[in-house]
Image (cartoon, rainbow, N blue to C red; front, side, top):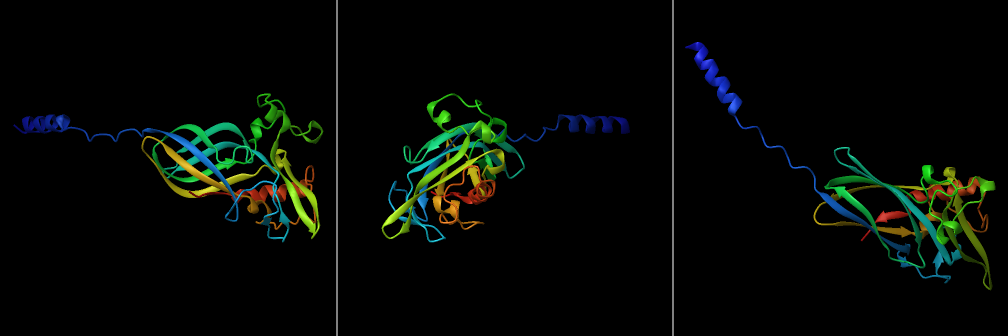
Length: 239
């Protein structure tokens, strides 16, 4: 009799329905929308409208750069990565929308990406031979690869005269990397991350940059690294 009871209990335990497993995360098409400002002022090319923290009054005549290797970290530790390298021209396309493919749904707490070409691709000829990529090549004599950033314009030297500046970044040692801690609940049929570049941040933190000290930095290791470090927070998630 005892064995019959045990057998019945085992049978009932075996027949007990198992808890349903949670459905796998859905795949959500992900885009990034880019905007530009200078401390809240809209980007207007070739006008002496802007003032940085060193009191340089300046204009912007060129802002070309790359974005690459977008990485999002979910609150459970899962990481999603896209290794696309995207050429950007702020004056020719001031409000682009970038498609990054599909990402599993969930809450993501960290966004990282390079402002430039990530190290494994930063080699001469590694990108398609488009006119844009050819014009962004970094000289082989200086290490090869590509410019990460070309930011150029003019600044006021005296009330009646201006001079040019050119913030050109290249080499893996001067590659800016953005890191944004956030909380993005990525769900639904599609999701867009709104990113705004504040151009004044290139000249602000941790180094206040003065064009009167150094207005052309290409090949200058110290000043390229300073501008690259300043680039860590030039982008913010901002509708």
